Length: 263
Image (tube, rainbow, N blue to C red; front, side, top):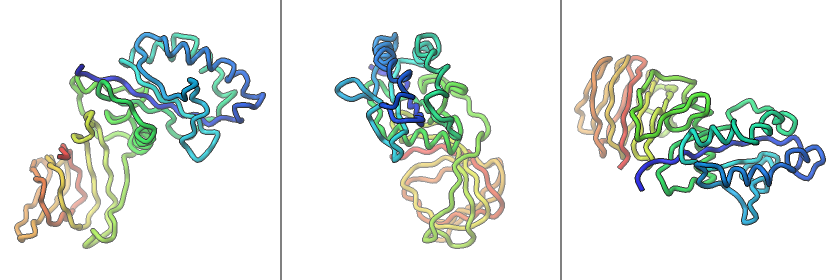
């Protein structure tokens, strides 16, 4: 069946081991809450052992870091379970059993019907929202994004974005800081849209994807290995085809909107 489900991952740093008397109030409610989720309208799947336990699954280096990974038919079904069921009582006492985290502990994203998210996928989504803020690729309850089957309006870059520097073997001149904001990724992970910004510098490029670009600010020069070059400035649009090899030089700090298809 065509369409999308909602995946969510939620992590928590426990104050004590699960067998500690200090965690008894939490542990004593787990079976009840898990059963409530399993029978909740719109519930699809959750990460668990053969015995139905999720707290014994460790996916992080810290043994006190617990993970909850589940799939729901839509956002409304998840909201009702979280805020309008007995689960809400656990939320009120969360600070009693879990330490406050300085970074995002929740990420949600849309997946194609029938897909079961892996732990690695969930960890990637958590890292994505931590680096880029909420976007179509990974979002939260405070700022949800519609299913890919709905129209999505793209705003200007928000959040700190994902900052990075190119490896030295690619650089020709300068050492430009670059920032990317991915605002939409389809269910296959091959099509994505967002913004990109770079400081002045020059580096080698080799495209394995198709990319449409619209310049928002700055000046860049894109040169093919045959020596032909194109200068692009604010307001101009262009396409770089898969297989293009050459150099990209940012003459003035450049910001572009990109649309990429990775074949």
